[in-house]
Length: 255
Image (cartoon, rainbow, N blue to C red; front, side):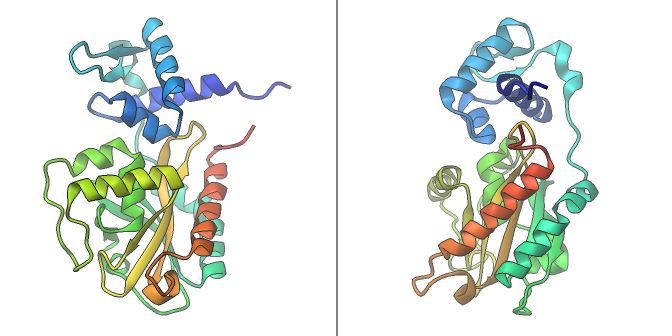
C-alpha cells in the first residue's frame, strides 16, 4: 500500500500553521516554523495560492489563509494528550540524564509546563512552583520562540526582563541565539532565569513538521554544563533523541 505523499503533508502543514495564527506570516517565518527549505516552502505557497487556498498580501508579501479556509483553524494541542504521548519518553529522559525533564507549550505569552519529572539532584526551578517559565530566559522558551511564530510575536515591542545577571535582554543577541537553535535543533539557557541552574531543550513536531511543544532537562550548572559553562553535547543529544521519539508519537518522521 503506498505511503503518504510528502508534498501533500507539507502543504497541509503550511495550511495548519496559517490557520493557527491570527496574523499573516512571512515566508521566513513559515520556513523556520516547519523546518523546510526556502525554495520548497515558496513553491508550495505559490501552488496553494494558485488553487485559492492561500492569499498573499500585496503590500507586505505575507501569507494568510484564503477566506474560504478560515474554518481550518486549529485549537491548541490538548495538554492531556501531550502528557500521555510524552510520558514514557520524558520519564526515560530523566532516568538517563539524572536531571528534571519537562514538556512545555506556549500559552498566553509564557512557557507552560504540561508534564514534569523530577531529577536526581533534588533541585527545583521556578516552574516547579508556578508551572510557567519566561520565553526569553529558558531553554524550553527559546525553542518555542525559534519555531512558533505566535510565541515570537508575543515578545515584539516588549522589554526582555532581566531575571539574573546572565539573562539575555539584548534583542539582536536573542535573535542570533534563536537562529542558532533553528540550525542546531536544540536550545540552551545557563543561569538565565535562575542562578546556578541550566537547561537544554528541543522541539516536538507533529506529522506535518509544525512545532507543537518542547521537551528539555534542567539541573545544576555543573551537571548540565562542562567546566566552561557550555552545555554537554551528550546531554543535548539525549534531549534531541527524546524530542524525536515524542514527535514520532504525533506522526512526525513516519512513512
